Image: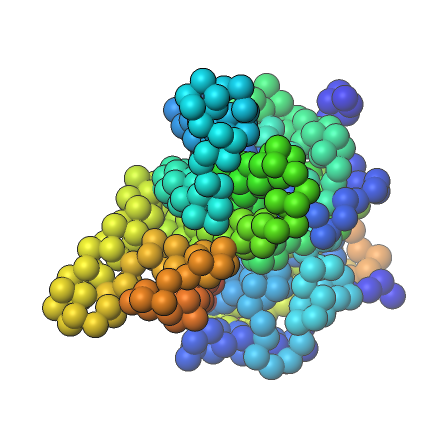
Length: 286
Length: 304
């Protein structure tokens, strides 16, 4: 390292590919996120349920163990509902993780006025959002998409190729549902982090969107008795949309999968609008 | 002729319903350019427009030959920007902050780390580079902002109020650094400041903005050169004929009050001729100053 050269010199070396430069932000944000031991422990804890599920999948096909309990292989039915339940549980953990991690991403940059530093470089707002979003995306993906896919692959390898071909739609459902969950949580995390500069309040707001939406929806349902309140319940909308992707929507659902999808798109658009409004270089003295 | 660093042609910028910049026309080629003006003159808006944060509503602005409207990314790749306000992540060490800035400008991780060390040593923060930015003093924060602005080796560095809030010692250090960067001749500097002295000490050209318009452009180097011929003299023992004697040498001369003479030396006449004349006439020269038309004078005239 040429630290002895205490004079200024220009740079004429190679440059990195601009298309992947957003990953720089992700790398630095990861370092900051995992400085918290509490968060690290919480993150590791998110893998307990998938590990237990993997054990269940193994034992469910282990004839010698099942024979001790007087059961046959395939005793537990592994179907769309099983995967969706696992995704719902992991989704709750992903929501909590978003509430902890999300506020640490954008809020400190806004509080410290760091946006001009980022955006005065060959680096756009879209790349900034992508870089910060990737932090949440990779964390959420690692506790939802990855474990569920591993469970699906393990189940396929334990039961056989026939099960895989017959249930390949489950793989598609897992990928699409996880991506939907990731998209909603990323946007929610970034929007709340941009909206409120105090981390604690931003974290509470993220959880509040789910809780308040559920409560408000229940009140509307009780008053209007037409199921309109479900449009405010993000968790319900997500599980309805996921059910349609897993191919087991119930006909008597108060809102149809199509309406759930439309409501989610509207919700995401509002979050995007909020992010676009808040993430600006506000250096106007004029 | 060299390519202009900044080229404005009928530049109008409107933010909301307010027109902030009104038809700016300018070509700047110097190594260091000072941007002056009272609050609300449009300095920050001009800088933000050059950085591509605001789009011109009319006219064009080109930086290093690139159009701010269409080539903002290319411009930003060659610019280093030191914002006026705090612009950092307080729980980040200075070395990480400057390294990240370099990586965002496209430097590979290893080169970015090397240059971050160099830049921090260059601005005098070498020993404090592993400390968190939040624990820095105001002067150190300013230096860290300068380090992130130059770490990637830009061709143009925009410094917005670089000496804002600095104590005299820190200010002097910042001014020396800017002068050193100018002396290297490898980068252009645009310095936006309220402090006329800072601009006077560091810049070759000065642009004065008022109410979104350029009210004065001054080539400080040329003015300094022309001022070298303008002399103010204070005498003792003059019987009133000394001024006439100076005029007979061929100098334009004016007596403001008895014993105080202002004169402009034409080509071929030097100061020693004045001394000789005073010695011949037994006149004491109590004071002999080269008059400097200070930037303050220029600024006040422009604001009038």
